[in-house]
Image (cartoon, rainbow, N blue to C red; front, side, top):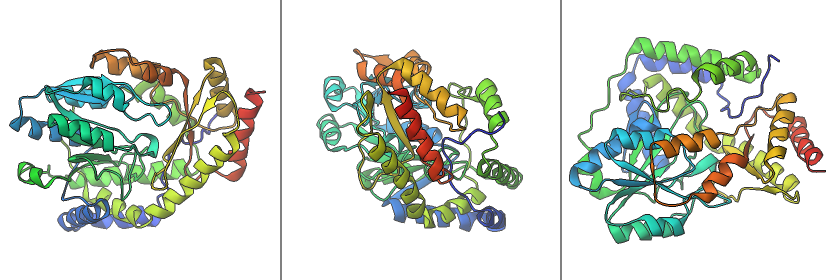
Length: 388
């Protein structure tokens, strides 16, 4: 099979990619312009642009730990291994907190058990484009003087990332606002501005920018026609998860990618609305199906994927095979292998029953713009066929 539908895709226009090449002529003003747009859109006091979300997280810890002797950082156990790896790289200790089902965000009751005076920071995550309410987490952090760093790598929006002292964003290929590269650290707490004002962003290389933009053009063409079979095979066999524990350097957010980001910001609500329509379609057609747990969502969510828990593990495996046969790339993301990787470099102070349960039973359905109505109908039909 040569074709394979993409799990996540942002509909870049070819003219947007073409005009992004002109950012090479005015790199500084392009980067500063995108920063200002992000600050206004998010409501940030200061934006720092770097090469990825985990680089942004690492920078946050390198600066925060200068004024504190606290060593522990509490994170949800249902998370990408690059998060605890960045914490370890900063010579801090990632401590695992169980999650809620549904929602998959941090379980506040478990956090209450874990947090104490040793906690430098808590990292709540807004997974799959669905936001977590942070009021209880904020109260717990205030009690022990712990910083909140919101992980918005899989979410984006005007009301996402405002509660934390800091928040991180990712603009990679499988993200809400995808420029195929880059990450951002948002400073939201006025009291932290002086600590972060002297950080110097790395210099961007024009040749590398040209190479990345050329790759984006080719990838965007491939994604539009869903011609991902060979690439998907190579990716899964050779590259997927290969960089999660690999050391990294702080890289630049290239001006050309900033220009792409500006274009996408202008169309953000249009893109999100399309994802939302597909998420609602899944919800309305699967809500009466027994044996599945559907996500809860709010109006301001960005609907990057549609996460479903299938209570019967064998049915989950059959569903994945059936979806692949109709060229639908449904992803597992934080599966059992991922969960064990997170455990291997983190500290667990108790059982993580919900995180372990979700890691074995989750399927993420695509919500991107290239999905057609007949494909959505086929996906729903497959679920009903497997639950007869």
